[in-house]
Length: 423
Image (cartoon, rainbow, N blue to C red):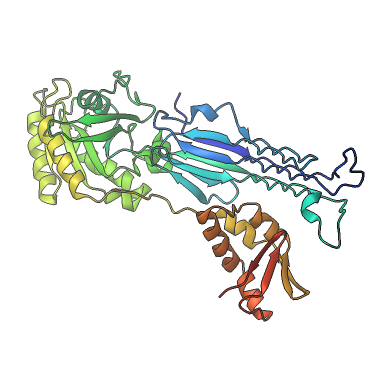
């Protein structure tokens, strides 16, 4: 069964709690605090696996939870970090926030990784709160909660070339002739219930990925037949090969079919309708096709659409077609980005409040915004620090500090983090 859209719940691990403990050893009756920090919670990480082609793995498993961090212990023993949960998805998977329907990840490249739920930060043990005036703190900090959310996974097949056309015109047979793919083929409409992908290897030492898109019928953009569920799979293709039954043996007119299918494409997506398109006039081994091929060329080639007579049954006529596809692919720019990603982490943080107090000359910033932000930042990672600086500006913390009169060199404190303010 082909599954191309699912809704699942993801939950990152919670941070472990910091420990309250004091050193107690023989001959040292009043040792200092030695409570260790809790471990950070595990993340939920999505990874693109080219060996997967559907979202079938999510049909029966709807919830994914990373491991929580362990609590800290005495003798300055830190809790172990929770293990990440790795979720493998096929290339072409779009991840949407189920509440807003905004795209939060477009996973296209082999091996691509994206963290979609960050684990909570481990709490600090009481050893971290000891000062010259507070030598025996009897408190520690709890770990923060990990992110959790409902998301929708939507699969849009990635292929350089997409085969489109009415059902039963021979798309699956053409795919089997040109690639090593072996789709199930039978003589009835809507044989193909899922996009089939294969690699076309040509004598020009070039190759490309071709997808057989399920048959489109009139009204598909409104959901008729299998319509709109499968139209999404050709949104990512760079070239469309329009397969027409040139024989007309089922009483269809190939010229009329060409315009009907393109009308459906235009109704679904104007951008898709502008995609480069060539015509594969199939079933040329049937005598009645000779008359129709003349009509097709007269109608379409004057509009810049090339027509290639082919026969999937006899595997003839495909050299010229594949040569043209290679030429077009080399001329077209690569389609690297398909969907604009929404930075839901910064959006969440921007909605949370913060306060700034001046204590002994130190600008102390606190509140939910600070807790969430610091829980997602790794101070030892350069990219994470860049994100930290962007978030401070976007949430208005930098402007708020300026409005309170902060100067270069003044100290800013956020929880246990202290740093000098520099313009």
